[in-house]
Amino acid sequence: MDFMSDSMTGNRRFRTFNVMDDCSREALAIEIDTSLSAKRVTRVLDRILTTRGKPNSIRVDNGPEFTSTEFCLWCKTNNIIVQYIQPGKPMQNGYI
Image (tube, rainbow, N blue to C red; front, side, top):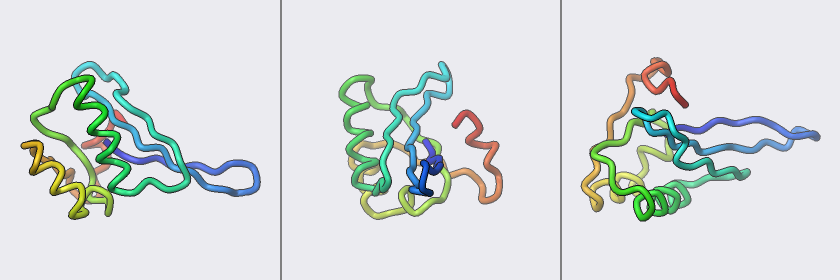
């Protein structure tokens, strides 16, 4: 999982939250908005869990959405291991 960002005409910025399956390289979710909070991230993940099942682990960077209490508690509640990539090593999460 990771975020990407871009801007529209007039310099209005938006972000995309992307969830990829490392094995199949399938995009499980792409959420787009001008603001994506940790609560919104967990809502998207809940939707994936109901349709695709629960993963053993999730690989993420050390961004504020993924180190927040909301996200960490969601992972603990769902028994999902969080694998943080090393700082400065974006290729450890290269499919995004």
